[in-house]
Length: 345
Image (cartoon, rainbow, N blue to C red; front, side, top):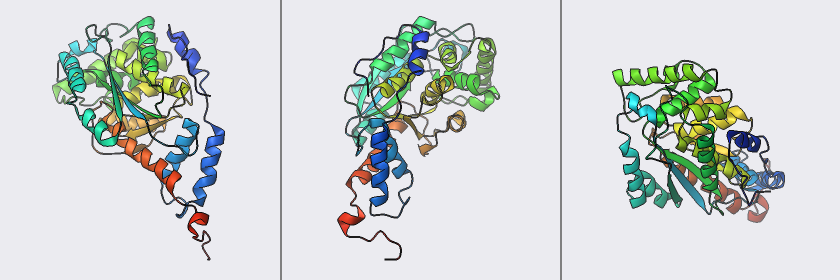
């Protein structure tokens, strides 16, 4: 059953305890969806992933038929000390400026939310106090990371039936690359892309910074949560918290771009199955994103050449999920439509 009161989170040990006891899918709702799907007036499998999405939605909402009435985009904003290493094309003050733009309704995600019927909540995460430069030490200490995680958990609105965690944070593709590299190995250049538009020497510097950071923390980043704490940011921890808060509240999740996926990947690296209630909304042009989705086994719903963040790709994918639910619930069955379901009829 979904929780009505979330557990207290004061330390990363608390986070790990929550991850070790995650609720599973609702088997009764899943069984009802599986029984209805073959009766609908279409050839089996003809709606492709829409059929899979309807079943997934029912299992994780715990109701049949599933529906998408109250989707929310949750955008968390954070600043990163590693920006001082020249990893971004934009200065750190842009994060606060963009939060103001979200609040004024002027960003891309505001328009997409209006177009797709999605509510928007924006939370700034201590922008006046950036995380520490993770090439010199951990970005956050245990208590700071746990507090951000708890804030993300608490941000999931009561009554939400689909959640899209997103972010804004100058420097956070560097953090996402470092987390991904720490979790999945390879070379730093496998995971590090242009972000806000760095190229040439600036991109080479960004790659070097990611490699340096992962070497520094290699011995201490013993699981995904520790890697997130040492190499992430407050908004990344908050997105991870929102993913788990949604799981506890019986709400499916659409993951957004590279940074959102890196937050989720830290959970998957700590607890197998932690992302079973999640779908990947889209794949961005950030080169590490496709590789990371493959590592966590989440094929994207959309591939539109986007790399904005802000939960923008996830908000667009709400329309796909809503359509899947509408087809599953609204189509007539063969019996209702007096259509034969036998190939030889």
